[in-house]
Structure formats: C-alpha cells, structure tokens
Image (cartoon, rainbow, N blue to C red; front, top):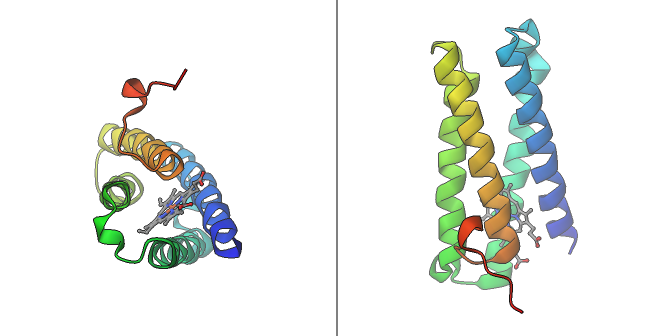
Length: 129
Ligand code: HEM
C-alpha cells in the first residue's frame, strides 16, 4: 500500500514537472537549464520506476506474463523517448512541441492502462451495464 502510494505520488510529480518543463521549453526559458530542473526530475523518475518494478514483482511475480504491464512498460519507453526529444535542445520548436504533446498523450494512456489493467484504448472502452 505504501509503495503504491509512493508510486502514484511520483507519477503525479512526474506529470507536474514534465508539464512545467514543457512550458519552459515553449517559452525558451533559461529555467529549463537550471541545475535543479536537470536533477530533481531524474530522482522522482527513478523512484517512480523502482517503485513500479517493485509493485510488479510483489503483486504479479512473473510479471512479464501480464500483457497490460508489458504494454505499460513499452509505453513508458515511448514516453521517455518523446520526453527526451521534447526537452533536449537541438531540434526545431515544432518537432519539440509535437513530441511534448505526444508524450502527454502516451502518459495519459499509461495511467489508463495502470488503472484498468487491460490493454483497451479509451475509444474502445465499454462500460458494463
Ligand atoms: C510514467 C510511468 C508510470 C506511471 C505514470 C504510472 C502510473 C501508475 C498509476 C497511476 C497506478 C495506480 C493505478 C490505480 O490503481 O488506479 C500505477 C500502478 C501500478 N504500476 Fe505504474 N506507472 C508508471 C510506471 C510503472 C512501471 C515502469 C512499472 C513496472 C513495470 C509499473 C507498475 C505498476 C504496478 C504493478 C501497479 C499496481 C497495479 C495494481 O494495483 O495491481 N508502473 N501506476
């Protein structure tokens, strides 16, 4: 329970910090290069990943057999790649802005998959009557 709370809290912190850095990126703010901005998110992300893997091992054992968890892990990798493209300098603004939007969409799907524990896309979701 404590680990899950830690995991969900870090997920929320990650979202807030990613949105902040995305806005700073769009504004060309020097805050994006600040030492704190470059270190703090990594600490939160590491706790998020370690707590996630701990939850997976403790809750599901051979968790590679859980399709939704593997899909979630793949989505986390896509989220990281989009995040790197969006936040690292070097690419054009439209490319970074598109990567930022894509990362947010993928993040939404990760939370959706975590919550429903099924690989169902939101537009295919049917509520049981
Ligand atoms: C961007 C990264 C991640 C986000 C945003 C995220 C988000 C969440 C959220 C919101 C929950 C709670 C869902 C609910 O009960 O309503 C959750 C649970 C969980 N997450 Fe993550 N997570 C991330 C990464 C990971 C990783 C890397 C793993 C490990 C493979 C993982 C494994 C789990 C497990 C096992 C649960 C518990 C599911 C259950 O209650 O049985 N997560 N995650």
